[in-house]
Length: 310
Image (cartoon, rainbow, N blue to C red; front, side):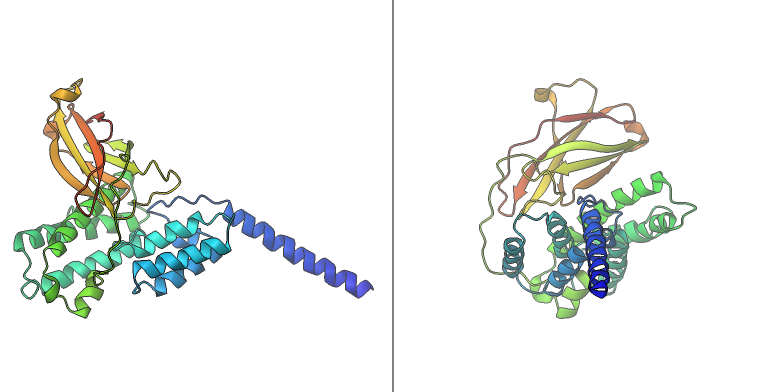
């Protein structure tokens, strides 16, 4: 009897300790900060996301079915972390900074080495090479500053955020122009360009505009945060959508009807950096954003966000 009591005591001690660890892990924030790693999340969620990653070559429909099955099995449980991690793995450009670096630097070298065969526009390639390799302002230089603990300052992190947006924009522009017939299986692996899924899925016109707010404001730099108001607990972009941002720089206090919005930019991330030159300091920039789906159908525009350029 005494042995049974000891065994039961040992069993319950392990059970409640494990339960407490799982609850503590589940209590961690679920919203992804780009600087955080997957290791921040509970092991079960990371393991499940890794299983989905192994099937990334399958169609989106297969992934959706797998998620739906998992959600039904875990009805009532908080699995938001899985949703976010799945989006991380599915996105072409990794969110984790080290993974992003490990992708864009070799991918840029690959594009440069195969520019003739892929019939790239040389001006676009030169822009990308400068963004990656410029010895004073390029990604390799800036990322090196951040990975060195003695030089990991906020101004370098802000510059990193802006560089990411510029690199994503130019790489998407370049690779959208590559004829599909020119791409080999090796190209698709090196450039994270899976073959298109020809199963047609209807994409809705978003009924709302993105929420637009200022994340950080430093000297001649703004970092904007964009969020789907229909899914406030997630930073994911709605399926089949991207964001169009327009802006105008002018004097303070302009009314809506006097603002000549232009300079349209395509945004695919929830954080977006804008850099200014010294001549614009003291002026006001007026931002507005909307969703646009793959068919070019746009949502309503957001409210205008005016911000001083410091």
